[in-house]
Picture 1: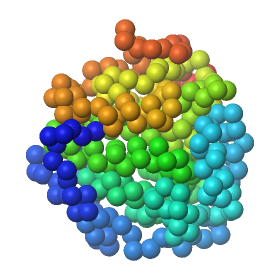
Picture 2: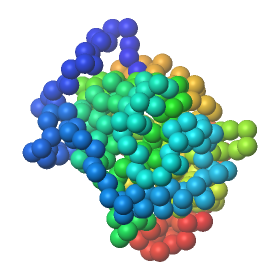
Picture 3: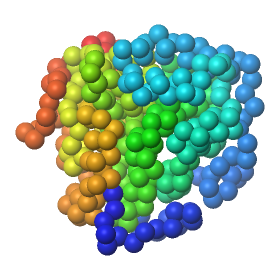
Length: 312
C-alpha cells in the first residue's frame, strides 16, 4: 500500500492527527493516555466468564462448515476453548510465537490514527469489557468476545497477519488524503465481513460474521445477499450497512490474493481518483463485478432487522 516515492513513516511514534483530517471525534477517558491503552485487562467475574462460554458454545454450533479453515485452526492453536475470557498476557505470548502479534486492552472504540498505529506495530486493540445477558444477541460497540473470538484466531495465519499490519500502515496515507471512509469500506468488507473461496465452498473469515450466529448463516447460505469477488477499487467506492446484515459480501480467492490486491496496489493513484463519498449502493451489482451469487435482496426489501424480516 505504499509507493517508491512515499516517505516511510516512523511507526514507532504515534502520529499526530492533523487538523484538516476528517474523522469522527471521540472523547478520551481520563484514565488512558495518548495510546488509549488500559493499564490492565479487566478482572472478569464468574458471570462474565459464563457469558463468554455461552457465546463460544453458540458459535461453535454454527461455524463448522461456515467458518474458513484458517479461523478454525486458529481457535485450536490458541486453545480458545479452554473456558472463560482469555487472559491477554497468555494470549499475546502464544500469538506472538506464531506471528509476532499481541492483544492489548482498550476501553472502547478508539480514534482511527491510534487504531492504525497499533495495527502497524502488530498490536490488536480489544475491548476491555464483555456484553451482558441483556445484550447477549446484539451489541453496538465491539466487546471482548467480538474482538478476541472474531478477530484474533485469524491473526495466527501469517499472510493474513501481514495484511493486517499493512492495513495499519496504510491508514496514515488515507488520513493524508482524507479518504478514511474509503479505507474503512475495505476493512468492513474484508476484516469484518469477508468471505473466502475454499475447496468445500465459500467460507467466512470476517469477524463480524464469525462472532454472530445469524450473520454466519446468512453470509454463507442465504439467497438475499450478493456474493461478489473482491475488487479493491470497487469495494472502496461501496457504501456499507453498520446495524444490519450485509446486502453484499465480497469474496477472496486466498489470503495471498487479498495481500496482492491491497499491499501491491498504488493507493496514491487510487486516492486521487476517489470521490469524497461512496459511488455504489451496498446492494449494487455493476458491470465489472465477477458475481458468484446475485442476491434477491428479499430480506432488505422487506425492511431488514427493524421490520422483523426473516433473514433468507
